[in-house]
Image (cartoon, rainbow, N blue to C red; front, side, top):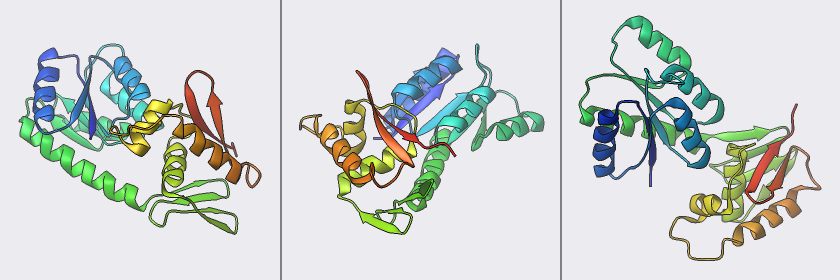
Length: 226
């Protein structure tokens, strides 16, 4: 499933976009302002954000900058303006695309699909490095200094996900959803088992990162500060 965040203080736009994207098979999370949007991003994994420029409490430019600081997802800005200065400000904030109101829902769908393809291609090639630790999604290898490790698939995917989202806390349920899938019917304690194995593998080898337990919440990967 692909989750999309739509942030707009116009209820009619929220409803229109939500209905159209839901018909396309997307899961839509709706926010009426930038603060609510960040709260949703903090608890839900979204793959793309559609953000209105003019919103109360936090405008679309500031929200886009906050998304850029914390998440590696594409952003489409919606605006009623069509001035070059507004577009410039949007791209400086870090938006990937720009759509002027009023717009055809189909055009939004085309742009969403194009951005998701582009980000998928980038993520397929991405290599994450923390200190002397490198994790390669293409080869499923973890390299620490001159040592190479090949992990069981789920251990690798769990480590890769946590490293991709370092310093962010995830519940067992959320990790199950991302790594094992929403249809997984096993015990969510399987997360604990895999975390334990990762700690046993790497705790004595490197201090580049630590997988910490956040009591009553879940787990986070803490990257060593340089």
